[in-house]
Amino acid sequence: MSRPAKGARRWLRPEKRNPDGTLRERAVWVIRDGSRKISTGCAAEDVEGKERALADYLASKYQPNRGRKRHPDQILIADVLMIYLTDIAPNRAREDEIKQRTAALDAWWCARGMTLADVNGSGALDLYVTDPALETAYFANPRTASGGVLERDARCAGHTAGEHVERIRWTTPRPGRYRVGVDFLEACGKASDREVSYRLEVEVDGRREEQTGRARLVERDPRVFEFTVPPPREDAR
Image (cartoon, rainbow, N blue to C red; front, side):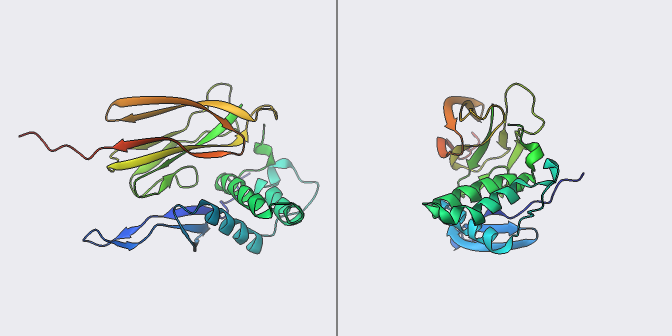
C-alpha cells in the first residue's frame, strides 16, 4: 500500500534581501498544503501564533475519515487528532493551548503520512537546528535555503533496539548564531516512557562539543544548545 500524501504543515519562508543587503521581506510562517502556500502573517519568533494558525486552518478545511472497522494502516493519525480537536477540545479548559499542542502533533504525523499501524509505542526525538536567517531544518523542512540538510530522520516505525539518531548537516554553514532544539513527540516503547535521555553532538570546523539532557513527552525544548559559526578567515599572505 502506498503511503498517504503529506498533509498541511508549517514552513518558515526565509527572509528576502535587496542587492544592497537591506531587508525586503521578513521571514514568515507559511502553511504548505500540497501545492498551496498560505501565509500566516506570523513572524519567525511567533511560535504560538503559527501553531494556532495551523490548527485553525486544519479545522476549517479538513474533514477526517470517521469510517469504522478499518485496518490500522488505513487510519491516519491526523484523522484521530482532528476528531479530538473538533469533538473534544471545545469542551475542555484552555482550548487554545490544546489547539497549539494538537497542531504540533498533527504537523509531525502529517509530514510523515503515518497511520495507527506505525505506532508501535524508548523514544524518538526530533532534532531542530535554526540558522542565522531563522530558518529551521527539521523533519518537515529537511532542506533550508542556507544549505542545511536533514540527513537522518529517526522514526519509531520499523525501529530496532538501540540508539535513535538524527543528523542535520551544513556543508558550508553561514557565519552566525545557530540554535538547537529537541522535541519528544513519539514514544517507541512502553506507554510509561514519558521521559528519555539524549546526547547532542555539535561539530564546527573540526571542534566537537557534546551535551546531554532529558526530554519529556510532548514538551518541546527549542533552545537546548547554541553555537556560533565564525566568518571565514582571510588567507594568510
